[in-house]
Image 1 (cartoon, one colour):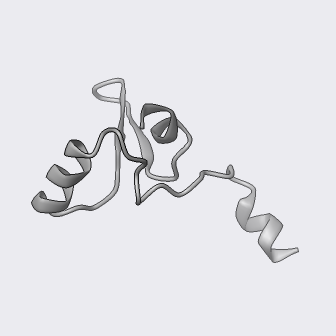
Image 2 (cartoon, rainbow, N blue to C red):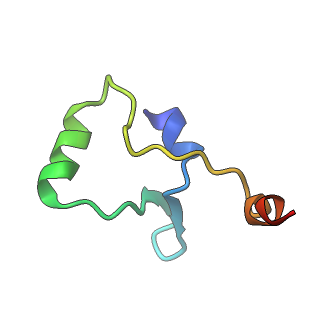
Length: 59
């Protein structure tokens, strides 16, 4: 799942802690389930296609 996280839309950088984290808004139960299913792929994964994806859709 680590490789998916690096390419995910929800992967965000925190300058204060100098770390990346998942910015997906989950409740406690969903978060626990996500952490327990490490062998399965993340069902919330959304590929980050870069900052120009919106422009590509407009054209």
